[in-house]
Each structure stands twice: as C-alpha cells, then as structure tokens.
Length: 189
Image (cartoon, rainbow, N blue to C red):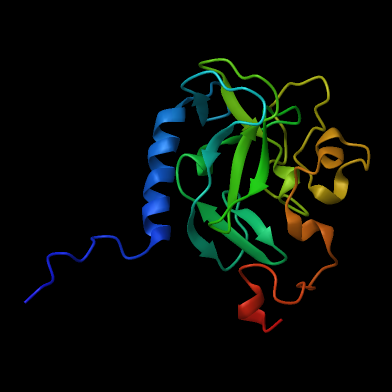
C-alpha cells in the first residue's frame, strides 16, 4: 500500500529547480532579437544591480562543446535549460555570471535594467576559447568583433576585475582543488 504522506518531490534540489523555473518564467520572456540575432531573452520587469535575473539549470552535459553549450569546467560543457540557452552574447552585457547550487550559473544584473530590454552576457566569461560567436553582432562601442574567449580578454577588463567569470578559469588546466566542487568526487580529488 503506498504511503500517502510521502512527498511527491524526490529531493530538495528537485523542489529548488522547480522554484528556479518559476522565477525564470516571471523574470524573462523569449522573443525575436531582430536581424541575424535570432531569438533572445528580454526582461519582464525592471532589475536593480546585483539582482538575480535568471537561474541557470543544466539540461545535459555535452560530450563536446557546441555553439549552444556553456563551459562549466575544463573540458566540461553543458547545455542549459531555457531561457538561458537562448540568451545572446554582448561585448557590453547587462548581465554577469555567478556560480549557483545546481553546478551552473546564475545571471545577475550588472547595472539597472529596464523592462523589455534584451538581456545579454559576455560568453568569454565562461569559455576559455569560445566557438559560439565568430562574428559579433552586439554593435556596442567596445565590440571585440567576436566573443573570443577568456584567453582573449584584457587583464583590466571590468568584468574580470569584478570577478564575474567562471571559477574554473582561476586555476590551471586540469587541476581540481582537493575536495572542492561538484566534480571533485568524480575525478578523485
């Protein structure tokens, strides 16, 4: 006989992921970004600097990087769930990344963002060498012409100085700090 008191959630992480999806649905909408940019993510409300705009959730890990995957560690790429997977690159973004509890990234407002503004982030803050944007369409004053990658950013780049980039980029290739991070158990550190 089934236990009627048993909760329908398998774990607190499942419940948290459901909450993250609700927050994403309230905060952003998917719409046409115009011209050659395809679809993009737009703000459904105003955001203040430091507010979490989107919560990244991993849909699947990729065996090889793709133009839609986001690098989460050396040689580990993941495709994120919508809406994040549809977000566009800009060399002058209004969002930055911070690691989250799901092993992915949250996207926070760098400055005040008005309602109905396209939400963008700099792909170079997660990719050591990005293949996603070979020709940048952001049209910002400081456009680099391509997303490039972390390896191409100037050391005095404002996002680097603020620390808004993937944590794995802080350590040499192939080195996992002992016992730290979601992949430490997998690689035996």
